[in-house]
Image (cartoon, rainbow, N blue to C red; front, side):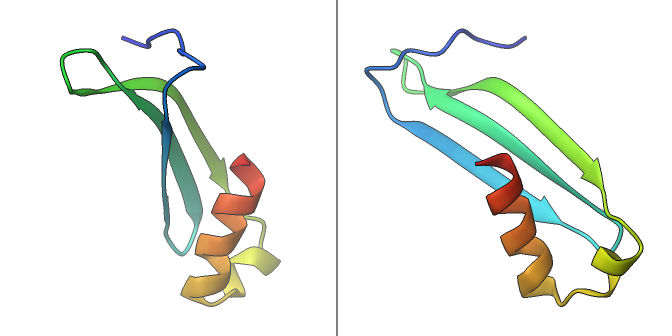
Length: 66
């Protein structure tokens, strides 16, 4: 279940890229100290993007979701 954001608290962004897609999860720490999910994101890479290096695909994931 997704949680509403609390803009007074820190956000945590996790990304992961493979050879054909990337995904991201935005989370925030709850009052109980657990990370709660705020949003999910995924995108299939374009043909040219599949030829990027692993570093370039990871960078693409971060810059896309920010």
